[in-house]
Image (cartoon, rainbow, N blue to C red; front, side, top):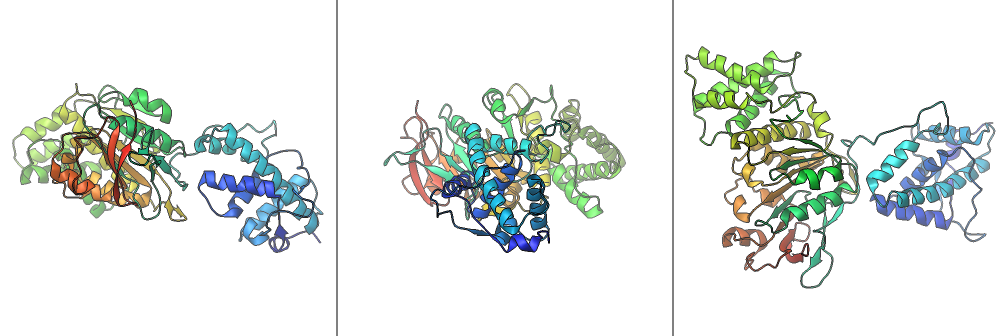
Length: 510
C-alpha cells in the first residue's frame, strides 16, 4: 500500500548534529526560535536540486540530533500531503516505504542545511539578498530549460517578522562603560518609532542614515523619506533602491486623493481629513466658512470621481471655486492659495497608495521652493500614507515581534510638527500594529514643546546631540539634570523605551 499523509506525520525524523547546528544558526539570523521552521526550509532548499541527496551520515555512528515528529515538521491540513508529493516526486519512485521516506527526509534536511549556510554566506549576511536568492530557487522545475527562471525580488510591501536590533549610530558605545548600545526596534512591549535631535552638523542625520541602512539590511522594507537639503538622494537612495522625485519638476507619482471607501459616511470622513491637510498649508487658520466650503469641495470631488478618472488637487481647486460661487462668496486668500499651488503638477495619479508605498521613494523638497509647496506635498503624502497604512490588517507577530510593513523618515520634522497635522499623529499613535515605523529628525527637544499628542511618549528610541535647547523640555525627556550643551562631538543622550533609563552614548566619531 502506498504511503499516505497519516503515515508520514506519525513518524520521527532526524538529521545530523552538524546540520542541526547549521539550522540553529539560521534561526538566529532570521530571528526565529522554532526549530521545525529551519528544518522545513532546509528540506525545501534541498528539493530545489535535481540530483538526489547523499544518505545521512551522523557525526558519530550511533548519534544524531533530537528527532522531530512528522506532525510538527510537516504541519497539518493539506500540508503533509503536499510534502509527501514533493519528496516522492523528487525521488522518482512511487513505492517508497515509510523507512525509505524517513531516510530521504533526513538526507534532504542535511543537504539543505549546508546549502542554506552557503546561501547566507554568499548573501554577506543580508536578509534581502538571502530571501531574493531563495525566491529564485522556489520551484521544483528550476533546472528545467523550458521554464524561465524567476526574476525580481519579493514584494517589499509584504510584512515579515525578524528580530531587528539596530546599533545606535556607527559607533554605538556607552560613554561610561564602552558597552555596545543597541535599539531592539520590534521587541515585545516596545515601540519602533524613533526621534533624533541635534543642532546643525551634530551628526543626527548621519546617525539616522546609518541606522536606516542597517535596518534595511534585515529585508526589503519600503522607505519613504523627505529630503530638504538634497543630500539623502545621494547618500540614501542607492542603498535602498529608492525612486527620487522633486515636485513640481518631477511630480510625486501617487494618487493622493485615493480613499479606500465609497459610502457617504466614509467619504465625508475622508473629505474632512483631506481638507484639513490642505487648510494647514496656510499660515493663518481658516475661518469656519472657509473650512466648511473646502470640506464640501473635497467631498464633491471624491463623489464625482468615484469609478472614473482619478481625482486631482486641480479638481478640488475647481470644485472650491464652484462652491464659493454657489454660496455667493467672492474669491479670497484660500482660493488664491489653492489656485497657485495647483498650477504645478505636484502629484500625478500614476500609482495607487498600495503601489506607491510598496516601494522606496525619496521626495526632494529643497529650500528654493516655496514653503506652501513643501507643506502641501508633505501633508498630502502623509495623509495618504495614514489612510493606506492604518487601513491594513494588523501586521503578524512572531514571538511578540511585530513584522514591519513601511518606514517613513521625516528630516527637518519641525516643519511638520508646527502644523500639528492629524495624519502624523495617527501614524505615530496607531501604525505600530500595522507594521509602521516613523523616524523624526529635528533640531531640538524644543520642537516638541507644546505638542498635544505626546509624540515623544510614543517613541521607542529618543536621542539628542549637542544643541542649545531649553532646560525644561530636555529634562522632561531625559530626566533631572540632563543637559545637551556639554556633549562632545558625536556624543548624545539616548533613551530606549524598553530600558527606561538615559544613557550617554558615543554614536559616531569624527
